[in-house]
Length: 435
Image (tube, rainbow, N blue to C red; front, side, top):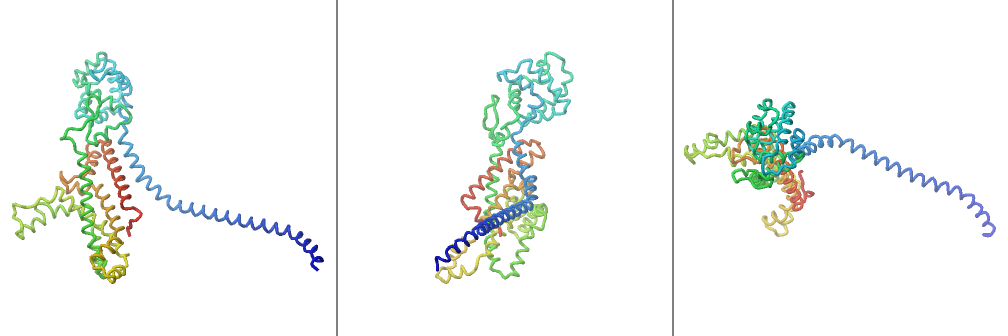
């Protein structure tokens, strides 16, 4: 019987073979089509996500990346002399630096100074040179007033009659050194160093070394403020977590009140409280703790800076710690106590390690914010309470030495990034929690 049906089975199998091939091909096409549709959906999802984040990306580039890039470029950019007295700089290439230059250099300089005067940049050249040596601005101002009266020929003699400093080789050395379109002089000045008459780098005299000590003071103050905020915020957060919700909410409102008040108003309030004739000194005198002639100086010094900045930055330490403590189940501590641990061991071995992410995040926030603070030290710091940010603002607004301000800012930025990398290596930024 099997032999009778075998030809029929073979025939039917041959007849079904094209159908099976078409079905297999269709299945492959369906799988390929499904994969293609999934890829298209994934591309659409990525494009939509990019479209949603694109405004934020543009905002960060415009308000963060570009200003920082411009700052770092300004710290090394030095095009003023190379653009306005290029022929004089070329003529100085063969100068031996030991004596005043040849007549041709003076002739070229006078011609280019006249051109710079017509363009209105002669004063800027004097200001730029004055940042390297005090008094050179007055030299260029005096020369500018006499340029039109300089007769042709004997340019060297005529310039020396205007001011004898044109015969000083060190003056020409500064002009030659600043002739490059890019310079490291701003960073050298920011590190309390300078150039000698021969172009060698040397340390500033002791009475002019200010920036290194300011950097050290800034980081030290930021560290102290971070520590004080941690000491104050940690027990406060610990107590608030254990209070009933109604009482903890009331305390939270009191702690967040500084956020609802202008920074300038808060700083001014501390001046009223801490000054010699202020509220705190008056209370101490009235209570008999001190006499009227022994009033304490608590403002316009480092004490005022520390007190005001701790008050302003305390919420930035408190909120991350509090949010982490709220998420720790109380059952962990109860379990440790039930297993025989005393309350102190329970706190240090079980509870405190769980609050580490909040402590690390709050410390990083307060430390970085402290480094860049400007208004509070400016108002309550006085001479001894100033930080590096105050001198950056001074060079931007008063001395108009933007190159030095940019160099100081760049050094501060690099130092913060290095400390951040070190902190990440020790603490691990991925373990931080802000809420």
